[in-house]
Amino acid sequence: LFSEINEEIEVLNHIYIDELDVEYDESEKVKTIRVILHPSTCEDTSVQYVCLTLVCDIPPSYPHDVPDITIRNPRGLAEEEVKSIHDDVIQLAEDRKGEPMLFELIELAKESLTEGNIPRCECCICLEHFHEGDVFTKTSCYHYYHQHCLGRYVKHVLSKQKDDKEEESDNEVCCPVCRTPIDYNLNELCDAPPPIEDTPTFEISESIRQAVGKMRDLYIKQQENGGIIDLDFEKNKFLINEVILILYSRLLFYLLL
Image (tube, rainbow, N blue to C red; front, side):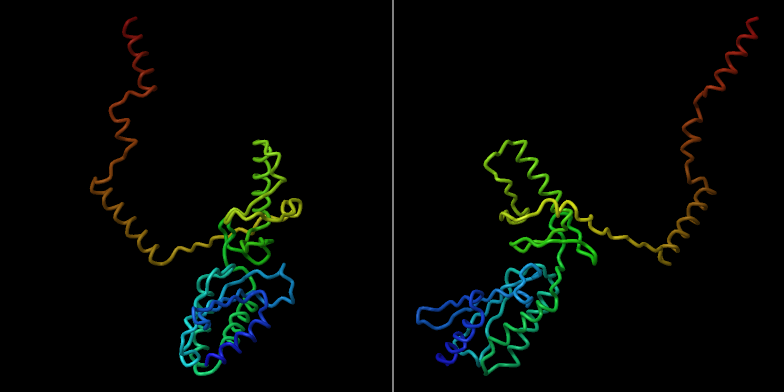
């Protein structure tokens, strides 16, 4: 079993050259493997919008016992998508129990990222989800923004640097989330259209209509029984308004003639 797992790791090292990290225990047995996964985009990293780190803790009795599998540092994935990938990988591990499985587990997670290579998260600035037609961008630290929102943020940072007279800043702007310096094209960001706003739809349900009807009937009943106070009437009940005051002054004038 020791040689089998080592052979499996050697194969993985040749496939996932820079993405794979292997941790060994004191007896030089494989303890944990971590692999950073991105969608398959023919090495065009500019269109890789999601990623995750797949972690497999290898038990001593592997492959007769399945690895303890976790997903860390997901980027651009909704919680339900992360859970779905995790569940699928665990199910495949159970199906492959008793035989080498690490390559298949990794590839299943990678295929899931490729199929869902669209950010399902929200813009880290306006906190609105991305919609079809939105112009968005991904930073090197895998945080997502509408280009319009990021452009406004970059202009604000540069303006603040100018006000603070930070001559040594070199127009450096950091990610609002993790403070990693980001690359940006300010003209391109500022030329991007604003994000598409959600158009809320609201329909009055039948239950609400019935509740409104009951409240109306109750109001009329209370009004008929004197249980509703007319605030305007009560407010002016004991006050002399301007018209009455004029009439009273004229009457007093004629009486004094």
